[in-house]
Length: 109
Image 1 (cartoon, one colour):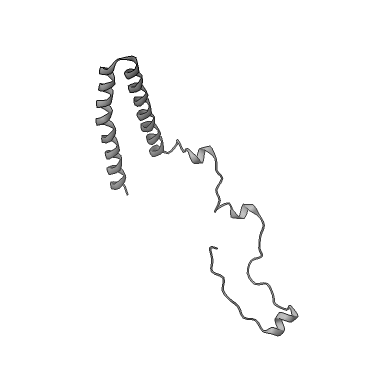
Image 2: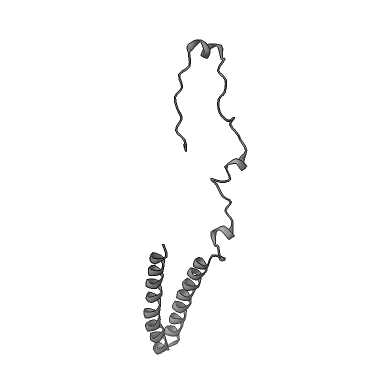
């Protein structure tokens, strides 16, 4: 799959006599030999909170969810003025954060 197999022509007498020597490395059934291609899947690997970019992404995503829940709570409780203020604030701050993150990503390449 990863390498192209080359065709090799051998004489018919050698083929019938089975005198052909095995060339190259022997085939291995060791699962650890392929660990480079298949890394371990762990929660630390899927959610690398030690990475600053991923931690920032998690914090901003959490802020969006929390503001949506607060806005919904204030609308249901009858405080539409507070919900409108939350809506206006998040309507300005979150796009500014997203555009800033896109520009930061493009200029940090």
